[in-house]
Amino acid sequence: MNQLKKWKLRDVILLSILGVLFAAVYLAVFDVGLVLSTLLTPSGLSTFAFELIYGIWFMAAVVAAYIIRKPGVALIAELLASAIELLMGNSGGVVLLVTGIIQGLGAELGFAVFRYKKYNLLSMSLSGIFAALFIYVYELFYLQNYLLAPGLLAAKLAVRIVSSIVFSGLIAKAACDGLARTGVLKNYGLGMDRQDIEEEEEM
Image (cartoon, rainbow, N blue to C red; front, side, top):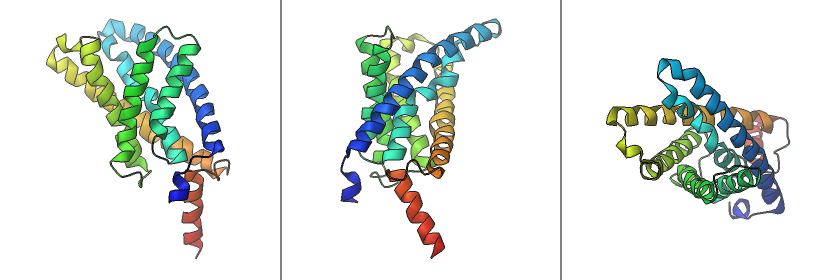
């Protein structure tokens, strides 16, 4: 277990790759949100456009933690993705880094509550939910969302949580497990755990 918690060069390399990958995804998702907002405007539901896809913005943290399986990975991955996104042209400035830290801390908590011993759909979904809650509270004050009607606030939070479970839980796990089956992740925590399970099943 102690050996698994030691950081190695390959962990840093994978984190860097995921940071670049998700930074590009995050930039693209913002445009998707704008399109959704336009499409939902006639129905009066445009305020939910970004909530529907908000879970995507937690995927860097959850995916990295699920694959590498070390304390601190979720926070670092989310902050790194935010920093690279900023360098790629996002005009958010320092605020973007702040949101990366907040979301990363929330995502980290999802695995920390299990003392970094459970990496499954439950911990991944919980990681996404905590990230959603953390950034939601931040936006209540930074964006003055507290001025919105209580019913609308509750509805937006509910949609955001569902989005987090779908993207950071179901989709992220399916994608990572599929990648692990190819063998490319055999040297990471996910690959090692899968190998141990397969060996036990064969015995």
